[in-house]
Image (cartoon, rainbow, N blue to C red; front, side, top):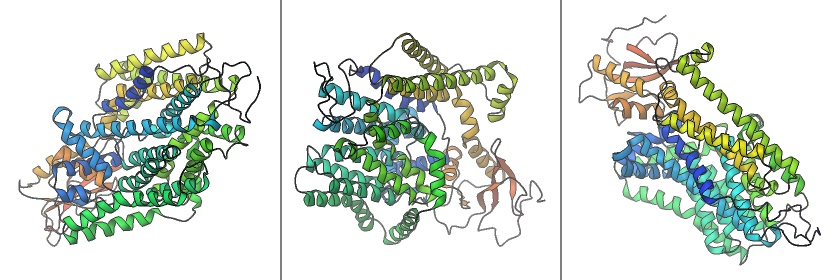
Length: 588
């Protein structure tokens, strides 16, 4: 073997054998579609995004341009996530219902993210300086096969990352930012061959990140794009023109939205909404805070597992070639994102950190091809052991839930979701199928010594898909009971009717989280007032368990095994009068 280039990358034709397209697509589809087994809204951030989309789908132009949750402003993020989810609700809700139609929007965002990562990685891996060492007597991977392996590995490592498993099945602003970060990377990679279209794509991605999540996120994506354009000399054409195109593209979508709201809606509503939006956006910008650094140090190990060891190895193995375009581009995007997370507020640090995963996955894919055989096997055996143990644990808990043995496991499930029993439904069928496939993969890996470069990322991605599928498929009814507010919403509506709420009356919102307001309207059809000054006899508030407020009326409604209580109190129409409803529980 003769080393004709100063590069640690080596790949034979056998190692670059093609991963079957049907296998890759089936894995990606199973990973994202398993989230549809969740029937209810499990988190308040998910419920808030659903409320915004449902309001748009049933509302007016004001609701589409100024996001709100059934009349109460939601200025924490721009409207892009709501627009896409509302379109899915309008199209698919007659067949699958509003919540499941809303969940389909996460499929849209995941598809865009995976495609952007694959084509971006494939584009830079085809470059001449990215190619592996040419062997003395031939047999090295062709540029086409090599770039395909790098792109496949990047997508598989992205799917295998623990951090996206907590958010990817929700159509929330963080997932919009994740998708736009991947699109921004794709645009910058494409600009190496097509400077105009690639630069426009990168600029639009930065603007859409601001439109779909926060201004802070859009600013750091734009800053990263500017740094890459200034520092990378491989871009063809005039640099100043590219930067001008980038800035114009980044300003266009968000400006169109702001101008449309200003000219098409009443001035008072627009000014009030944008003042609140500006205040919240400004709060995302912060100075370096040790608490943020502490949060990053505590969470990055699991957030970026299993790609962070590959990134660390890549920094060492490529240490003399880090200035090459195919490495510098994803590395600079990642470094800028991590630095931005350090200078963000605690509330937005996790969202910004999440958006570093696409570029880190690409860099990790280039690191993967520099590993020796023994090092490559570490990822294989890590995936086989960790995910097999996790799957066995989930099946053991499900068996205990079904038959009551072991009793401690059964008691923990019963405590989580009292009164709920496991169902022999399609979720169980999903769990059986994915477990059988995982056993096939385990047997294949333990009985063979495959040399294909994508085997480690494949096993890691398949393992995380296995765990997600088992969690959604086997335990969706239990988690629905433990996490959903559907039962609470129905009880609140029944309590209001018992206390004498008339059909044409409205109910006041006492600073409820927007997510709770959304589920109370969707599941309980609670008629909240749409203006903060409307006089109402009843108001709904959230409190923690403990002594009830002196003005509490009716019976408090609590969620199982939480300290959260939903209370009814007199509204503005009753606040200057003596309460006419007795306390169900006297204050202590």
